[in-house]
Amino acid sequence: MSTRSEFGVTIPFVEHLGIRLVEQSRERAVVSLKHRPELANSWDAAHGGVLMTMLDLVMSMAVRGHYNVTAGVLTVDMSVGFLSASKGDLTAEGRVLHAGRSTAFCEAEARDAEGRILSKAIGTFKLLREKK
Image (cartoon, rainbow, N blue to C red; front, top):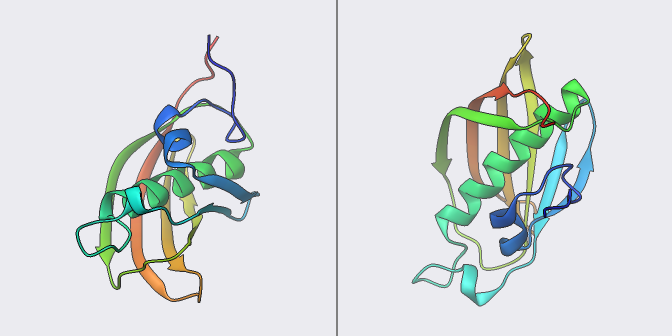
């Protein structure tokens, strides 16, 4: 039996990583993650996969907030650019740039504790029907 998390849906991988929802509104979503050694790459910086997961999640949360739903959101396409590395805590902010009836085009960026941009993403997301 699964229970809905703070994200409105159960996302076991996100819960495993420890990503937390900071803010969700029609305008944007923000998530955060505390640095832990097991989330690092071989240079002791945040692993790119962790950053990509945060960016993907925050854009999907922005879609849920924009449409005011808890339904599932499917990533159709996502492109990520990495600008810098970080060994500290992380935040990511996502926004819906264009919303159609069931798809949304989004952007997001991940930052370190000092506010330096680490990575940026754009993505297309499809809103799924509510689970019954």
